[in-house]
Length: 289
Ligand SMILES: C[S@@+](CC[C@H](N)C(=O)[O-])C[C@H]1O[C@@H](n2cnc3c(N)ncnc32)[C@H](O)[C@@H]1O
Image (cartoon, rainbow, N blue to C red):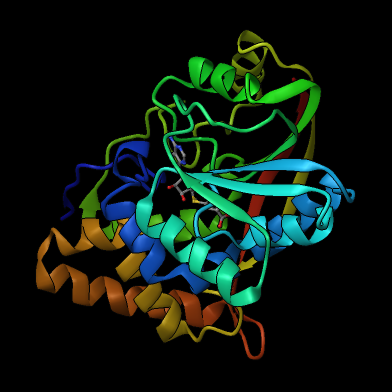
């Protein structure tokens, strides 16, 4: 019989409040695996954004800064790429990466909801999965809009509904065999906060943005990064995703059984040379400040 759980269904609880602490540390500990998993979506969003030399771009919730480095490359020495993130350990890593790569990308550690940057206004704002964690999204987006030139374009990647994200649903399906998980609270800050595009449009409009347009991204993701084996993908999920924490809270027996189930699940989706491939869907959203 399933024990009771404390976290929302299907919604890996990555609440904004703990990104500067536990969640940031977990993201950092598996940085390459997380970034590898969402790399195709970053590429799609960067291609859609089509940055030009000379543009000044703000990368919201930049994490370890992989996309900020790519943006810096695209905008060149006349442009600017600034990564903004609330997690000090991720900003530290991003700065170290930029230094090692000789990149002009810069990074600031602050809460984007309230940050006041001593920077000229930006031409563009970019965010790969860094915009869904605000406790009060309207004032947060209004604060971000104040950092942009009038008419500046924003490009956001946000997750579509969990039912369209097999990488999450399949993992949570295993967790649910052992742990009772209450239904997700729609719109709660977290990875799936903006699954409902009407809700996101309402937020952007209330914050002063206009002309929202959306393209759906659908593809497969390598759980634990490209080339990860079923065992490595299992280790990644248990160490890095909320599913692992939920299972660990329910004892060694549950954890051992779920580990075996996850490895069996991932073995069915493993393609040698590619990894554990499961479907994912995101919205690529643009709007104007
Ligand atoms: C899912 S990670 C994505 C990281 C990065 N954009 C990437 O694609 O590799 C979400 C990021 O948003 C950041 N974040 C969450 N709430 C934030 C806030 N209020 N202000 C700034 N960054 C925030 C987290 O610290 C984390 O680095």
